Length: 376
Image (tube, rainbow, N blue to C red; front, side):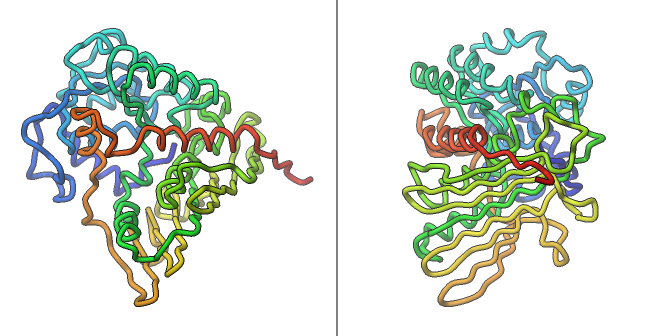
């Protein structure tokens, strides 16, 4: 639920024409063309657009060979903003119109968080695959229903963990670790600070029942990265805590949370918060440190404080060297891999069990967290 940085807003504006197979190729940065195919490989639509993350999701699948066909949303102002970004999209009259369109293979959504899983269940029951903004599921009861229907239908239920899939430095880190650059991974430390920007937030943003809690919501990225980089297929929450330490005017809100994890491939620590100060030239100084037996990697996702205002920075230290890598020209393969999976019924973009295990861990850490009591 983070704000878009000025750099990312500019990128979205420049790539708004990436719809229905009609792209102004000359206006796109080179990196945005990676994986683009002239002939669409799948057709996809959008239902509910309550968070602007939907723009990046559309762009990722379009780069991978998808064609945006239609959109449905209840809110006229959100619909107007979306159609300005993607002017060739058809506005559907109802959710049903999209669900029953047999030419559509994929539906994506960034609806209000507690409405995302029920929509995903309906999508799968209509024989379509689903890509949803995080948090893709907000309760353990929803998770059980998603798992049941996914098993019955064999459809893809994918959550857009964009801090890995759409961050070039994080993608590069995965390649380096696969090559053995830091040996066997021991631990990940994921930090997810965010700017709260109170004046821009809708009412549901402050209601835990709607957004799922801070660990469920913005912490979901870090659980995905923990599983991916440690190679863990099983894990448990050792300890977690949550609190509303500085926003008493919003009693149903949480502004801080952290978690300790233990997996069968390594250990993890996660901290998330809504305390990014206005003086930072980004919505958050997101960082990931990956400790290995032969070295470590630090990723500075969105900014490098005083050195660089943009993101995608990677620092590698091992037995041979200390190295900085600017990852801004690295490709982003997720969209293309997801389209491959939709066509071939494979799991190359993200294994289904990994997707849901990351969410399960976040939900359990949230539900059983100790509550911080300010001043006590």
